[in-house]
Image (tube, rainbow, N blue to C red; front, side, top):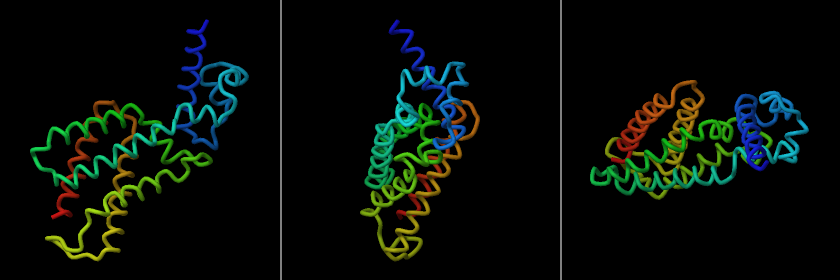
Length: 202
């Protein structure tokens, strides 16, 4: 009996994830979720007291925290080592962890940053960009090999680059493609990101 309940709960969560991804939190209805798996709305309420509880079951705050921590670690690592080849193993491990996260939770990540109006994630994209800029701030300089830039201009530049990176990743996650293709494109984007940032660090 418990195994049957667990199976129904998993089906509800799978359907909810699909509906939240397609319609967003505000426009998603419990009836939409029920129709996905041909059960009654009342049956959903046996497992989840409301749409809000169901939403956070499929898009948990722990995922947001993990994403932020991984991104902050990656920024610190790349700026502290300046992509030293001796640290390539650590860099590869971080890259693989990022790829695994984006592949496994692609729908949840899109929901968090683009389809979460009406939830605690409503400003998640702006908050993440601000975190990226603040993490980068200690490594910023006023003079580089290729250009001179003031402190305020540097912050604006970091904000633009961070916003662009998040938008590129979301674009990739929303596209209908195989997992392997998504992985390869993310690796290529990472090369672009690293060497673009490296040129600005010189």
